[in-house]
Length: 297
Ligand SMILES: Cc1cc2nc3c(=O)[nH]c(=O)nc-3n(C[C@H](O)[C@H](O)[C@H](O)COP(=O)(O)OP(=O)(O)OC[C@H]3O[C@@H](n4cnc5c(N)ncnc54)[C@H](O)[C@@H]3O)c2cc1C
Image (cartoon, rainbow, N blue to C red; front, top):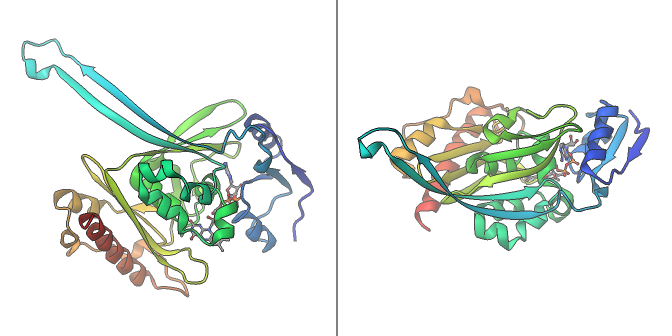
């Protein structure tokens, strides 16, 4: 079994990033709920731990809502007044620090007011111990193919803010998840926060693996002003959008709109818990139930 030879508790994001840069074989640990079990089983190898629990300024543990009214004036030189467009938009976003735990999200009145789907999703993760230690940043960095957060985030839309020792950047959520257990993060980058766009309404439903409460399949459906987003977790290759369902639901927001649309079982993996065709079938059923829940509100 590999051994941890060095353990650090940086007090700032900058120190954590510098520690990552200094040792490419080091690993960040946030809540430890995914990393430490895989390490103990010999499935993850590293020789140094950079423990984010020591960040002194609570800089990565917060929930804040931004309501921005912005006017986009796109005035063209023309006698045709119809081309003078003034587009007023209200941008309503919620930013959650990477070290915020699932339990904190589940208990937050701010999150509940923004999107009850997010509090419900967080409150349904694992058990009280996992929720108390596990973090939003750790969950999406890990990108377990059965994790709940990636589906909720992809359905809302938004971006992930990341830092390295020399720069910060924002990654559009549609570009963030690149495959099973993989993301667009560079080796020397860490997540600092996650920003969600407010949907008009949203639902996340999961068919639980009874032992762990991970999603055997989980589906998030979010209704936005001009479009519908459907994100599925648990199929096996990592979270994905179901574009055919989005188009159908945009045209007619009814469960019946999905009647003739099916997910290709090749998009899923089978294992001892469920076959690939079973998973894709469950995904469609959950998607239809989510639509019905929207309609019954
Ligand atoms: C019994 C059990 C049941 C669970 N059930 C569910 C469930 O139903 N749904 C669900 O979604 N999840 C579930 N989980 C996973 C849980 O949500 C974890 O909390 C989460 O996956 C990882 O968060 P963490 O803070 O513990 O991360 P850690 O385990 O500390 O880290 C995970 C990975 O993320 C990296 N990392 C951590 N923080 C950052 C950061 N800020 N920037 C960059 N990289 C970072 C680490 O280096 C590591 O590679 C379950 C876990 C267990 C043990």
